[in-house]
Length: 157
Image (cartoon, rainbow, N blue to C red; front, side, top):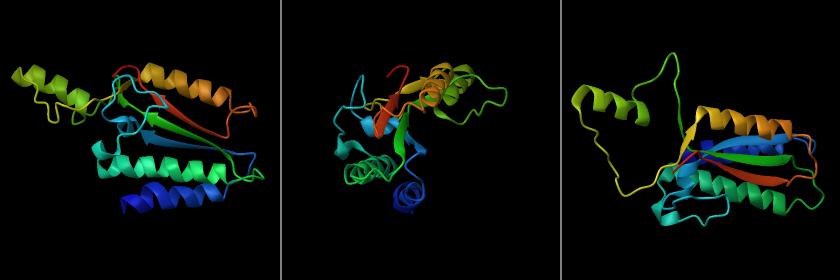
């Protein structure tokens, strides 16, 4: 089901769009597992990815293949956004997600339990997320931009 939702369904949606449209899809910075200060061009260490992250990486590959084989430019412009774990304050803040759960545990028990302590995690502040989306959308009409791009959005690792 992960493959179908993250790859097949997305490909089918993308195929229905026209070349003057802009296809923007959310991904995860977890495809850069094992890197400190990852960029869009850092190599992906496939052996470190869980099934979800690997499916997102495979989706990136499939979408890139479509663009590379689209010599008459019938496909839309494609942008993939690799979001870090988004952190910020909200009026209806969930406390079960990673960062809020750390704060809750520190406050209520004085301890923070960390599973997978050998992994790296990228974080993205709400302010940086907003700035990146405004930048992306304000440049959406710029036809000189790449037909396929990946933005690795992280405030810090």
